[in-house]
Image 1 (cartoon, one colour):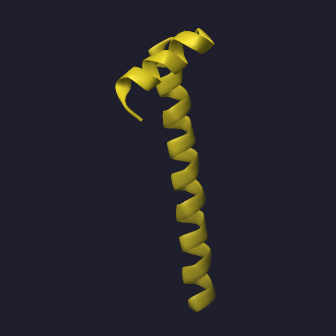
Image 2 (tube, one colour; image 1 turned 90 degrees about the vertical axis):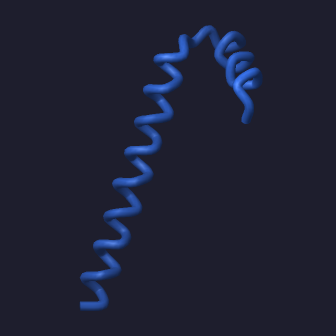
Amino acid sequence: MDNKIIENIISATLLDTEKVQNILNAMFVENNKQLIFRVHLELVRLG
């Protein structure tokens, strides 16, 4: 997505950029946690 599309989404939803960035960061962190956990489980399974 280019910046213009992102700006339009932000305008349309009346969210400020900081709020949007926080949401994206939280999603990124959560996805990483889940990935790390799955890798850990697989490593444990493989012994």
